[in-house]
Length: 128
Image (cartoon, rainbow, N blue to C red; front, top):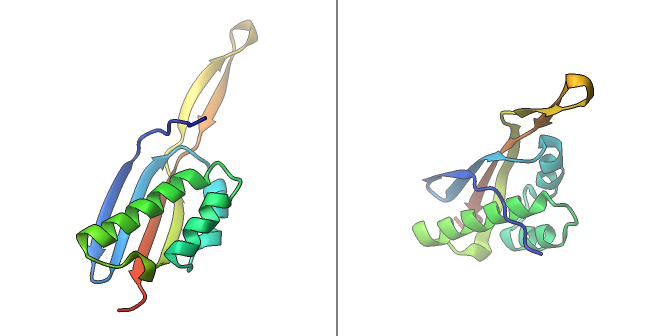
């Protein structure tokens, strides 16, 4: 079963031999995303893909899409080889919390808080 993921905004910046990708408003907890980001920080692009594909966590899929997108930008826009890329920086910051009210018994309400996060990944070229 393929799940549809909520679309999120991405910002790209490039300077020299590095590509920076920022995904904002990802609907997951910061702690769950950091658990995955800590595993891939400092690793090569190919090794990162293997780690993310076989991780059992649901939060690894948006991060996998982000790494794919960053590598595609590096190869298409800057002409870098994907085999030479590695993740130099990866960080997760907290985003705004979506708040709703759920109706409960006797006319009361219960707050529902859905956390979001911002994920930043920087890819650099090993050879340069």
